[in-house]
Length: 200
Length: 200
Image (cartoon, rainbow over all chains, first blue to last red; front, side):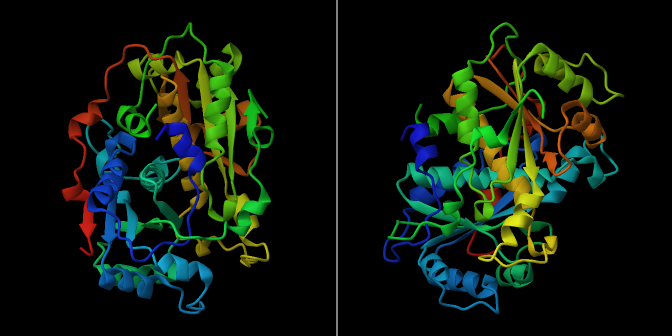
């Protein structure tokens, strides 16, 4: 698909056909493109958990759904139908290690040297590449957060090493009818609102 | 250009033809695509500073180059030739405000509700859309960080409101010969290294 069409067609899809798995070659392409995300110092501090079986998907939802949340919200019902879940995780230590090397020289590994957490931003780059590749494949996907209170149970459920932090999760599948997010009623911000020429 | 070609051709370009400005329609398309970045709750907490004049580009480099850094590194020499600079800035308050609305209900505006700073990640999404659109236009770009110690002078130079944080800057222009980053010698991580099926 033309690049611009991918950009224009991308939106979060919140319901999936539970009976159509994602082809393994497609899944591999999503992850291969994710690994092409740019990263500070080519640190590549991102990893991915892939769930695509009844057991691991069930484990994911049990570990991450807020305990005080109704289990039958339309959002959760739609999301749980996704046959493929990809969890992108950032590795801060990979950046601190990389920049402690001789060519960078930040041997103190002091996090205050970083203006913003590029480990999360770069893992976000990888996530957006998944979302865009999903559109190119004619599939649907939704990126959503894992509540902080459920991150420990998520870690335990999947044996996630302590150095890795999930920045969210991506549900992927063949699209089924869904309602657009009510948030879209807010309207997209315009260049006049968000772009500043030469200065404020 | 085909989406996959854009993904495969993207790389950071570190030198530019100083005599060829970026067409205004192209610049506008970069920013228009940036504004299509997904965002939590459609908060859209990202703004962009655009510098494309001799004066504002000079002001940018004077405000952001580390004071203890040699002024003539090959990296800086190449970057300074870029005719267009786009600085993506994240707005945390836009997220706290959005999620304090009735449909979300986080009226305490407590940042600990957020597993990771989506204001930075979403602004990163917008930045990657700029980088990819640059490739689609046949141009070159490099995303780089602004050192924390220079952020106050950057703010002062451009009158940046306190709510906004630059997550980096993007130099854009017509490509000139450059050396690939030595970091690339590290090699790209493979799916075998970075992808975990079903669990660790």
